[in-house]
Image 1: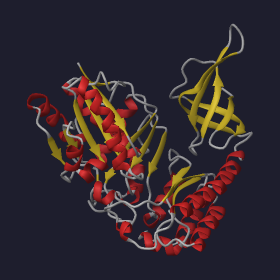
Image 2: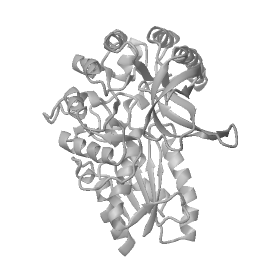
Image 3: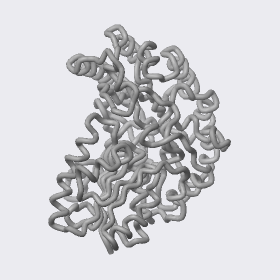
Image 4: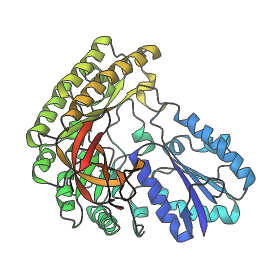
Length: 447
């Protein structure tokens, strides 16, 4: 038996890819561990969305260098978006890296690990291949998580001016529905109750390949026995169809949550970003969503300080927050990515201005989030239990010990609650919400 250590940086897609690599390494005898020093194989799955992603990758690799000095036979793999973007530069700056693997060739990992083990070859493969062959033919772990990600497509064809995804993940390609359904069934057999379908733009699933549409895929998936909840991420507002909105009316298993990145509330900025929709179109889509699911929680992404963003543009974003009232936001300061067109734009915003705008945005959103959470107080919510909370138990007498559990509502609100039972993971528990906090809810089980 050999040990593999995986460090996953970044998005949900990377989490899925890391789990996939662990599965396809299993026939070689690898098991996952949490120790770099004891690992025979180290995988760093990188992300280039955040600022200075490459430097953070090399900083982490510096720690790996010391471990490899103590264990020279360790195999070091760098994969993910930074690997795809930098290629040979990684082995030039970190010569102890054995394999640089692009985002579309993960299925070749076992072959390359064997080659390095036998010949100590250095391998760099960042080819942009098509297909999902590496996902087929590998069994799911017998015991899996309550909630799991399932990739349904890769890449992106939208080419937003700030984004590197089309350059590091490739052009859009969708996976066969049968393959997706088979994977979900395998996960359900292992104990999964909730799945999140992943793609850079799930709304355009299947269109290029003449497969079923995304709403049609949801209708296929809803019929899987044992599946309780369906989520998905991420959607592009320009492709949000009436059929997908209708799916929220007709599919009970679809959760009461929709993540729809708006990025800015200013039409000027949206045009500069190449988002291909307007503020008015976005608002109209939200109104339609809420007409079929009045309690749906809406979350979003916003970038502040995009090149050329005026104070008036930023105020339009603040006004959008007040009008939409998002349940929560992922908000970021704009930063250049070398391969993205916006890196060459003029009228860059000063760092202190971006920092101030982000603080003002977050302050407003925190007020809105608290207001949205307070609505849940005194309600009884169905909570799918995922794990014990960080504060795991409270002893109230010699005979009674309450364990604190964590789960999520259909609207994706985190709920912490006490219960005397030893194992609630995977069960749906009714919880009366007693207290709304900024980022979570607290309640008491009614079961």
